[in-house]
Length: 349
Image (cartoon, rainbow, N blue to C red):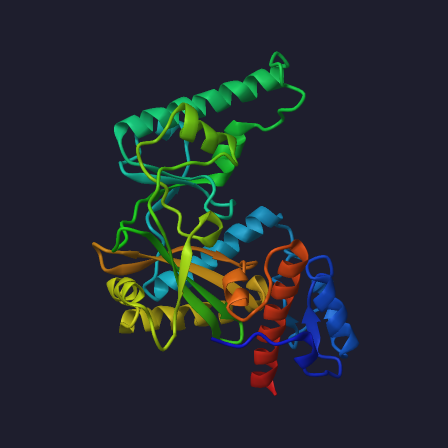
């Protein structure tokens, strides 16, 4: 695990161009300027020597951002697929397919744009399926009543849920993990082709409760699901087994063994993640979090998602950095980016 450096440890520069939007990380932005870096805030001013601290977010030609992101997503997934790593079977959510019972049980309905495991539902039984349909019909009716202005809360309610679900949600094959816990692996990589840290995340499989979103509330309270929560991340109460330690407790050893963390396949997965990140360093930026899930039946790793703005709390807290307030998080995230920048500069000198 790479040690997170302080801003003062960043080497001085004589005009090294780095791409970083000031609104994304103002403290690191000012630190880089004070140390002699040429901070590029507009992608049009980047050149072949530019190091991308944050991913490319401007100048995608005639494409809008959604189309640009789709092209990048497809490219990254194709590169991973060429190396034997794929997503679980995933299709866009369709009300027509839902209402006609075309989805095969069990499946996961998930919002691709929510963090922290929110709006991620395991539909396991026919009763779950029926309750999902009831919840979606309720949301469509609520949207309609709001639009025609006959709802009591029409002034407060402005979400078109038909569009919201159609644009944001996917239906994904359910992956059964090797233990009684919900588990995933997070690899935090640097575009310098380094692994900053890796962790196996695990969480107890408890009754599903979500009061942070309307669909989650409906499926928790009004039309409840028979299945438990399937999320593993720390925001939902999960814990971590940090990879690469010298000593583990018996429980941790058992969990790691069940996921074959010491196998050649997992070592290859780490190398593949670093390689693909390096290929897409201008689009992803200098750090990226890859989330993988292990299929106990197929004995194979699948990609769940990747984050060009991953949370780095677990990595930071292990090294004594606070991660409670917004200011703490910005400090930690900026220093992790500074760490990745230091690694890149070390390799390019």
